[in-house]
Image 1 (cartoon, rainbow, N blue to C red):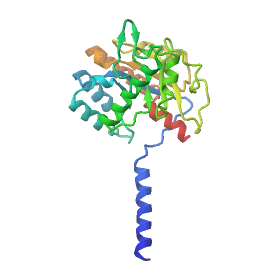
Image 2 (cartoon, rainbow, N blue to C red):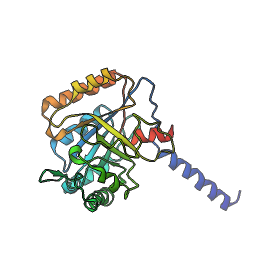
Image 3 (tube, one colour):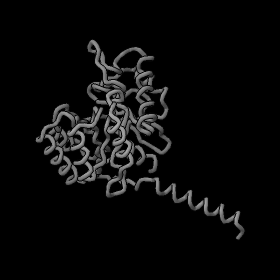
Image 4 (cartoon, rainbow, N blue to C red):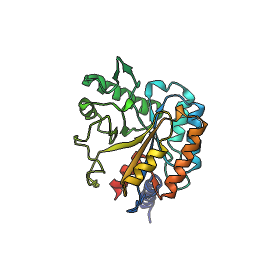
Length: 272
C-alpha cells in the first residue's frame, strides 16, 4: 500500500473516531417513563447557592439545564466555570449541564418584562445580544430559549425567526399562550427526525422553593407523560430547599423517570 493511500485511510478512521467520540450515549425512553427536564433559572455570577446546586446535581448524576442572564454574568471566573461545566459528563457519559438563553438583562420596566414589549426590534436585539454573549464569551452555541418572568408575546415568535439556531423554546403554560404557533410540542404533536424546532411546556414551577408536592400531584394525575419540565430558582434556596431537591430527585428516580436536558430530549427525537 503506497503512502498516499495509507494517509487517506488513516484520515478516514480518525474522522470516524472523532464523530463517535463526540456523540452522547443513546437515550432510550420506555413507554412507562417520563423525561424529567430540570430548568434552573437566573444564573448571573456564581454564588455559593449555585455552586451547591451544581455539585448536588453532579453527585446524583442528574443532567440539568441552567438559564443564563447574559448581562449579569460579569465575572471572568464564572465564565470560565460555565465553559468547563458545559463540557462536563456524568458517569453515564452524558453531558451534565446545558446552558440556555434566559434573556439579555431580565428587565422589568414599568411592569413590562423584557419579552412582553410589543417592539419587535427591541426583542430581536436582546436575543441577539444574549446569543452573541454565549458564542463570544462562553464558547457555547446556544440552541434553547426561555423568557424572563415566563412572559412573552406573539412578537416573540416573530423575533425568534431571526435566530434559526434556536431549536427549543420553553414556555410556561399559565402565562405564555404560545401553543398556536408553528412550533410543534411533544404533548400534542408527533415529533419526527424531520422536525427542526420544538416548544416545551413548563408544568411545575416555584420561585422560592422546590415544588415537590406539585410534582408528585402532577405525575399522579397524568400517567405516561412524554416529559415534565420543573422550573426552579436555586439562588433563592435555603437548607430545607436543598434537602427537598434531594428528596425530589430520589422520588423521581424511584418512579423510574429519566433525566434529560432540553437539548438531550430534542436529540432523542432527532435520533429516533
